[in-house]
Image 1: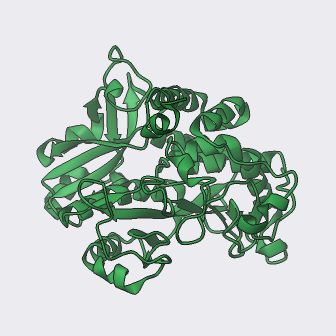
Image 2: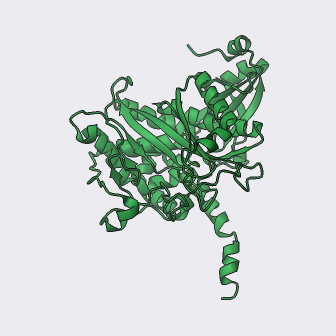
Image 3: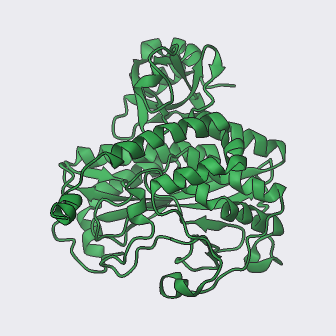
Length: 435
C-alpha cells in the first residue's frame, strides 16, 4: 500500500515537500510544496514547463507533471521540516519517455521480464572549494600525494561527519569516508542496492553534499576536472546482476574465472562492445574529457581510463574485477546522470547477455606504464563530440536505452558542444594571435 504523504507529514513534522526530478543534464529541479497541498500533488503531480529545464521540449509543449514516488521520501536531515521526493514525469497523461528516471524504470522493467535485476553502488568523488569556485577551500592541503591524508581529512571533519551522520540516519549503510587522490578531494561510500534505489540516493547525495557544504560556508563540486593539475572526479560504479527476486547474485560463480559467472562475462562483454557510445552518457560534458586521457597529475596518476580494457584487481583499466561476483566500471565521472548511468550500464550489459558477447582477453598489466604495448584495444573518445557521434552510430544501444531519451540527449548535447566550439579561449589568443 502506497505511503500517504499527508499522513507522513503530520506524523513526522514535515511542513514542506521538495517534489523533484532530474533532467537530461543531471540537474535536479524541484518545487517547494506546503504539506497542506501534498495530497493533491501526490495524485496529480507538480506542474512544470519542460522547456525551462534540460529536456527536449519547446514553450509550446503542454504542462509536464512530476508525480512523486512516496517510497523515495527523505526527510532532510539538516532541515527536518522538509521532505524530498523523487518523481516520474508525465505529460497529457502519458509518461515522458525522455525523463531519466522514467528511462531507468523502463530499462529495469525489461530486464526484470528476463529474470534480471541490476544492483549497483557508486563512488561519488567531489572537491570542497571556496565559495567563489576559484580555489581549494583548504589552503594547507598541498601534499603531492594527499590521498588518505589524516590532517586534511580531519580539517573537514564537521562537513564529512554531518554528511555521514545523515546517511546513517537515512539507513544507507555508509561505511567509510576518505580524502581522495587530489588535494581538496573526498569520497564517501555507502551500501549498494537496487538500481532505482541507488539512483535516487545518488541524486540526493549530490544535493545533500552541496547543501551541507554551503551550510558551512564552503562549496562542493562534482565537476569532472575542476583543476587541470589534479586528479578528476570519478563516479565508479560497482555492478552485479541478481535474479528477479534479488536473492541470488547471477554474476557469482565460485568455479568461474576470478569468481565471475559466464553470464557476468557476457554482461561485461556488452559494456566493452558499447563503451564508446556509453562514454557520451557517462562522461557527458566538454570538461569530462579533461579527465579521460589526461596527462599525469601531481600525485603521479590520473586514476582514469583511456582504453577499453578490463583486468582483475587493477585500477589502471576501464573495468576491474576486485572480488568474485561483481565488477567496477571506472568510466563515469561526477557529471554522470544518476539515472542514465545505471540505465546505460543495464542496457549495454543485457545486450551482452542476449548475444553472449565475449569481453576478450583480460589484461593484467599496468595500463599507465605499458598501455602503449597493447595491440587491438580500442581507445575511448577524445572529446565530447566524438563520444556523441559514437552514441549516434550505436543503434542497438540507443534502442535499448530508448530512442526518445537518446535523441533528446544527443540534440541537447550537440548544442552544448556547439556553444563550446563558439567560445574563444585565452589559449587560442596566446598561441595564434601572431600566426
